[in-house]
Length: 133
Ligand SMILES: [Cu+2]
Image (cartoon, rainbow, N blue to C red; front, side, top):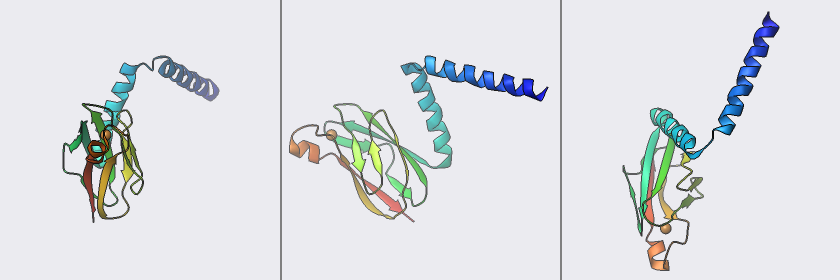
């Protein structure tokens, strides 16, 4: 009896796995992202940075607690921009949120890592992030 049960479980899992692969269109991916956002918000901070030519704005002030799990989303409203900060281990693109835990307090600057315009415009694309105790 146990064998039959485990066989059933395995075949159900396989079917689900195959269905997930086959149905991975953009809509499905978007739904999964929403689910992920909801679950992350409960355990730590979540921020959304909006990028325009040539300015980043955040929905909330980027102040995070050391040790907290943080998620940052990037929305490109104008142009194509990305954010990278090696110190914090952030590599953020519009389709891939950054999830990280800051382990050192301090004041950081999130800068655009895609050359998105003239040097002075691109250089202006930065937003401060503070990690507090
Ligand atoms: Cu930029």
